[in-house]
Amino acid sequence: MERFTVHRGLVAPIDRENVDTDAIIPKQYLKSIRKSGFGPYLFDEWRYLDPGWPGKDPATRQPNPDFVLNQPRYQGASILLARQNFGCGSSREHAPWAIQQYGFRALIAPSFADIFFNNCFKNGLLPIVLPEATVDRLFHEVYAFPGYELTIDLERQVIVQPDGAEIAFEVQPFRRYCLLNGLDDIGLTLRHADKIRAFEAERLARFPWLARTWAG
Image (cartoon, rainbow, N blue to C red; front, side):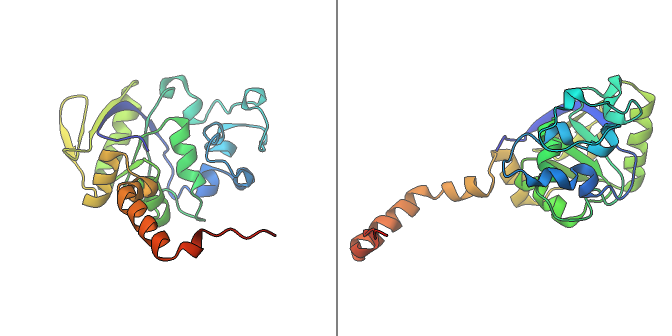
Protein backbone atom coordinates (compact mmCIF):
# COMPACT_ATOMS: atom_id res chain seq x y z
CA MET A 1 0.00 0.00 0.00
CA GLU A 2 1.33 3.46 -0.88
CA ARG A 3 2.36 5.61 2.07
CA PHE A 4 0.46 8.78 2.85
CA THR A 5 2.58 11.46 4.47
CA VAL A 6 2.09 14.89 2.83
CA HIS A 7 -0.07 15.33 -0.24
CA ARG A 8 -0.78 18.45 -2.24
CA GLY A 9 -3.52 18.27 -4.82
CA LEU A 10 -6.29 19.88 -6.79
CA VAL A 11 -9.71 19.69 -5.14
CA ALA A 12 -12.86 18.45 -6.93
CA PRO A 13 -16.30 19.02 -5.33
CA ILE A 14 -19.11 16.47 -5.27
CA ASP A 15 -21.87 18.73 -4.01
CA ARG A 16 -24.45 16.09 -3.05
CA GLU A 17 -25.44 14.55 0.26
CA ASN A 18 -25.88 10.82 0.83
CA VAL A 19 -23.78 9.68 -2.13
CA ASP A 20 -24.11 5.91 -1.98
CA THR A 21 -21.72 3.21 -3.08
CA ASP A 22 -23.85 2.29 -6.09
CA ALA A 23 -23.40 5.85 -7.37
CA ILE A 24 -19.65 5.60 -6.69
CA ILE A 25 -19.29 2.29 -8.58
CA PRO A 26 -22.49 0.74 -10.01
CA LYS A 27 -23.40 -2.84 -9.27
CA GLN A 28 -22.65 -4.24 -12.75
CA TYR A 29 -18.94 -3.64 -12.20
CA LEU A 30 -18.85 -5.77 -9.05
CA LYS A 31 -18.69 -8.88 -11.24
CA SER A 32 -14.96 -8.36 -11.66
CA ILE A 33 -12.79 -10.42 -9.32
CA ARG A 34 -9.75 -8.25 -9.97
CA LYS A 35 -8.73 -5.41 -7.68
CA SER A 36 -7.82 -3.09 -10.54
CA GLY A 37 -9.40 -1.28 -13.47
CA PHE A 38 -12.27 0.44 -11.62
CA GLY A 39 -11.10 4.04 -11.99
CA PRO A 40 -12.70 4.61 -15.44
CA TYR A 41 -16.10 3.65 -13.98
CA LEU A 42 -16.08 5.95 -10.95
CA PHE A 43 -19.46 7.76 -10.69
CA ASP A 44 -20.33 5.96 -13.92
CA GLU A 45 -24.00 6.90 -14.23
CA TRP A 46 -23.27 10.58 -13.54
CA ARG A 47 -20.12 10.71 -15.60
CA TYR A 48 -21.51 9.30 -18.86
CA LEU A 49 -24.73 9.88 -20.80
CA ASP A 50 -24.86 6.32 -22.17
CA PRO A 51 -24.97 3.09 -20.12
CA GLY A 52 -21.80 1.20 -19.35
CA TRP A 53 -20.89 -2.37 -18.51
CA PRO A 54 -17.71 -4.34 -17.72
CA GLY A 55 -15.41 -4.49 -20.71
CA LYS A 56 -16.95 -1.55 -22.53
CA ASP A 57 -14.24 0.89 -23.61
CA PRO A 58 -14.78 4.22 -21.78
CA ALA A 59 -13.22 6.00 -24.77
CA THR A 60 -16.24 5.00 -26.87
CA ARG A 61 -18.76 6.49 -24.44
CA GLN A 62 -20.39 9.91 -24.30
CA PRO A 63 -19.21 11.98 -21.28
CA ASN A 64 -21.70 14.13 -19.44
CA PRO A 65 -20.28 17.67 -19.83
CA ASP A 66 -22.19 18.89 -16.77
CA PHE A 67 -20.61 16.41 -14.36
CA VAL A 68 -17.87 17.90 -12.25
CA LEU A 69 -15.12 15.37 -13.04
CA ASN A 70 -15.59 15.98 -16.76
CA GLN A 71 -15.01 19.72 -16.44
CA PRO A 72 -11.53 20.88 -17.54
CA ARG A 73 -10.88 22.84 -14.35
CA TYR A 74 -11.02 19.65 -12.25
CA GLN A 75 -8.89 17.41 -14.44
CA GLY A 76 -6.13 15.79 -12.41
CA ALA A 77 -7.91 16.36 -9.07
CA SER A 78 -6.61 14.16 -6.25
CA ILE A 79 -8.64 15.47 -3.28
CA LEU A 80 -12.40 14.89 -3.25
CA LEU A 81 -14.64 17.30 -1.33
CA ALA A 82 -18.03 15.84 -0.40
CA ARG A 83 -21.12 16.40 1.71
CA GLN A 84 -22.79 14.52 4.58
CA ASN A 85 -22.91 10.72 4.73
CA PHE A 86 -20.62 10.05 1.78
CA GLY A 87 -20.27 6.35 0.91
CA CYS A 88 -23.59 5.18 2.35
CA GLY A 89 -25.53 2.19 1.00
CA SER A 90 -24.30 -1.33 0.45
CA SER A 91 -20.89 -2.49 1.59
CA ARG A 92 -18.51 -2.80 -1.34
CA GLU A 93 -14.75 -2.42 -1.21
CA HIS A 94 -14.92 -1.60 -4.92
CA ALA A 95 -16.00 1.95 -3.97
CA PRO A 96 -12.67 3.02 -2.42
CA TRP A 97 -10.86 1.04 -5.13
CA ALA A 98 -12.60 3.10 -7.84
CA ILE A 99 -11.91 6.40 -6.05
CA GLN A 100 -8.25 5.58 -5.53
CA GLN A 101 -7.73 4.19 -9.02
CA TYR A 102 -9.23 7.34 -10.52
CA GLY A 103 -6.42 9.25 -8.80
CA PHE A 104 -7.81 10.52 -5.50
CA ARG A 105 -5.64 10.22 -2.39
CA ALA A 106 -7.90 11.91 0.18
CA LEU A 107 -11.55 12.76 0.81
CA ILE A 108 -12.99 15.55 2.94
CA ALA A 109 -16.58 15.52 4.22
CA PRO A 110 -18.65 16.27 7.35
CA SER A 111 -19.36 12.54 7.73
CA PHE A 112 -18.83 9.18 6.04
CA ALA A 113 -20.75 5.91 6.20
CA ASP A 114 -18.99 3.61 8.67
CA ILE A 115 -18.10 0.67 6.42
CA PHE A 116 -16.94 2.91 3.60
CA PHE A 117 -14.87 4.93 6.09
CA ASN A 118 -13.12 1.78 7.33
CA ASN A 119 -12.54 0.48 3.80
CA CYS A 120 -10.82 3.72 2.81
CA PHE A 121 -8.10 3.28 5.42
CA LYS A 122 -7.59 -0.35 4.43
CA ASN A 123 -6.93 0.74 0.85
CA GLY A 124 -4.64 3.72 1.35
CA LEU A 125 -7.25 6.49 1.12
CA LEU A 126 -7.42 9.18 3.78
CA PRO A 127 -11.00 10.19 4.70
CA ILE A 128 -11.00 13.42 6.71
CA VAL A 129 -13.98 14.49 8.81
CA LEU A 130 -14.41 18.25 9.29
CA PRO A 131 -17.24 20.36 10.71
CA GLU A 132 -20.02 21.02 8.21
CA ALA A 133 -19.42 24.79 8.31
CA THR A 134 -15.75 24.27 7.45
CA VAL A 135 -16.62 21.95 4.56
CA ASP A 136 -19.19 24.44 3.30
CA ARG A 137 -16.56 27.18 3.30
CA LEU A 138 -14.19 24.95 1.34
CA PHE A 139 -16.91 24.35 -1.26
CA HIS A 140 -17.30 28.11 -1.73
CA GLU A 141 -13.54 28.53 -2.14
CA VAL A 142 -13.24 25.67 -4.62
CA TYR A 143 -15.99 27.19 -6.76
CA ALA A 144 -14.55 30.70 -6.49
CA PHE A 145 -10.93 29.89 -7.35
CA PRO A 146 -10.14 27.63 -10.35
CA GLY A 147 -7.10 25.49 -9.64
CA TYR A 148 -7.84 25.47 -5.89
CA GLU A 149 -5.36 23.19 -4.13
CA LEU A 150 -4.91 21.96 -0.58
CA THR A 151 -1.94 20.39 1.16
CA ILE A 152 -2.74 17.56 3.56
CA ASP A 153 -0.08 16.80 6.17
CA LEU A 154 -0.99 13.56 7.92
CA GLU A 155 2.03 13.64 10.23
CA ARG A 156 0.93 17.01 11.65
CA GLN A 157 -2.78 16.33 11.05
CA VAL A 158 -3.44 19.64 9.35
CA ILE A 159 -4.80 20.82 6.01
CA VAL A 160 -2.89 23.81 4.65
CA GLN A 161 -4.93 26.23 2.54
CA PRO A 162 -3.51 28.33 -0.32
CA ASP A 163 -3.13 31.35 1.97
CA GLY A 164 -1.18 29.32 4.54
CA ALA A 165 -4.03 29.00 7.03
CA GLU A 166 -4.30 25.57 8.61
CA ILE A 167 -7.29 23.38 9.42
CA ALA A 168 -6.69 20.72 12.07
CA PHE A 169 -8.16 17.23 11.78
CA GLU A 170 -7.87 14.01 13.74
CA VAL A 171 -7.18 10.44 12.67
CA GLN A 172 -7.25 7.50 15.06
CA PRO A 173 -3.58 6.77 15.97
CA PHE A 174 -3.43 3.19 14.66
CA ARG A 175 -4.99 4.18 11.32
CA ARG A 176 -2.62 7.11 11.07
CA TYR A 177 0.34 4.80 11.76
CA CYS A 178 -0.78 2.40 9.02
CA LEU A 179 -1.20 5.15 6.41
CA LEU A 180 2.10 6.83 7.27
CA ASN A 181 3.89 3.51 6.88
CA GLY A 182 1.90 2.15 3.94
CA LEU A 183 0.63 -0.88 5.86
CA ASP A 184 -2.57 -2.69 4.92
CA ASP A 185 -3.75 -5.85 6.71
CA ILE A 186 -1.28 -8.02 4.80
CA GLY A 187 1.56 -5.59 5.43
CA LEU A 188 0.79 -5.60 9.15
CA THR A 189 0.93 -9.40 9.18
CA LEU A 190 4.20 -9.53 7.24
CA ARG A 191 5.92 -7.48 9.95
CA HIS A 192 5.86 -10.75 11.92
CA ALA A 193 7.10 -12.95 9.06
CA ASP A 194 10.12 -14.21 11.01
CA LYS A 195 7.97 -15.26 13.96
CA ILE A 196 5.47 -16.94 11.63
CA ARG A 197 8.22 -18.90 9.89
CA ALA A 198 9.73 -19.92 13.24
CA PHE A 199 6.33 -21.09 14.50
CA GLU A 200 5.68 -23.14 11.34
CA ALA A 201 9.14 -24.74 11.52
CA GLU A 202 8.64 -25.69 15.17
CA ARG A 203 5.17 -27.07 14.48
CA LEU A 204 6.46 -29.14 11.57
CA ALA A 205 9.26 -30.55 13.75
CA ARG A 206 6.73 -31.60 16.40
CA PHE A 207 4.13 -32.89 13.95
CA PRO A 208 5.99 -34.02 10.82
CA TRP A 209 2.88 -35.79 9.52
CA LEU A 210 1.44 -32.34 8.72
CA ALA A 211 3.80 -32.16 5.76
CA ARG A 212 2.42 -35.35 4.24
CA THR A 213 0.54 -34.89 1.03
CA TRP A 214 -2.33 -37.15 0.05
CA ALA A 215 -3.01 -38.18 -3.51
CA GLY A 216 -6.55 -38.29 -4.86
